[in-house]
Length: 367
Image (cartoon, rainbow, N blue to C red; front, top):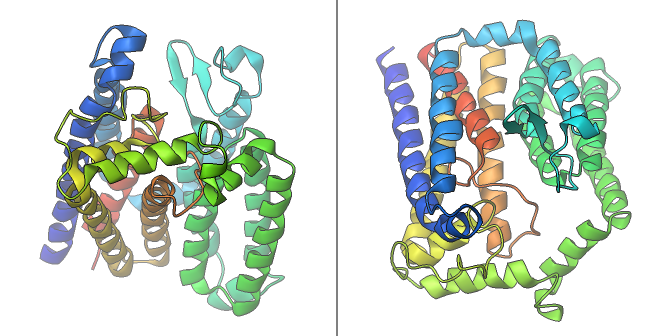
């Protein structure tokens, strides 16, 4: 029990460290756009604190007191409810004015990104599904668990692509694949998933202009430096300008309208510019430590559901982190995935903190 308590304490301590680092980074990264759009350099900081961090910590504390096994009872209902809310984004009455993408819905004064919550509910659903079948059944290529997994992922994926939110689908697919892999995915199933993924992504990219533009900007950003390759180039300029130690806190040049989305998806570039290689490396170390504690919780969980759920929640956060960092460093195409616990965004912050709360409860009951 003492070991479980140490793991739980380390989880929370690490989360608070990342939150503090992210909050400081947001103060600088959002100051210019906050002043220009709303006349308040702390506009985004205050919203993130109230609607993201504090609200998220409240829900994280709440779910940390709930027995994680109870999520199995609500898995299908939660997934259905989340799909319903995602679909509301296609109804004009719930759409944000001036936004073409259907990722957000507006309910009263609140704007919510339901696809962030969909990641959480789908991970719970897949973890529940796989616990209902034996190891042998999970490995059958035409077995019920694998077919249910493919069907549900195709259904959810179709909705997310229509929004469009390809990045969310990518993270969701990778996270649940990680769950299925430790649940006993066979070599035939792995090959099937790879082939389906290649064909599906190729089809989506071929029939989508903006997705093709992102691939081209990744392959050859310099061919259109003021257009398709602009964000990639500006991100690299910011990262390169930081050098080893950075230009100093609050002294970023890229945040002055040079780097798009400097307070959301591209905040890692601002961190690299202001704190250099040392600061960037520190961020990566924090995520690697989070991966380590998440894997420890999964390994020591008292049952299969806890094992699958802990791994899925951890993978969800870690895949987001390294896909975001990879995109900002031009190692991967830009996907629009935020940096967990750091980028501005209330929905993402709340769901990630809820994940920490669930991980905490699993850790408390671990061996």
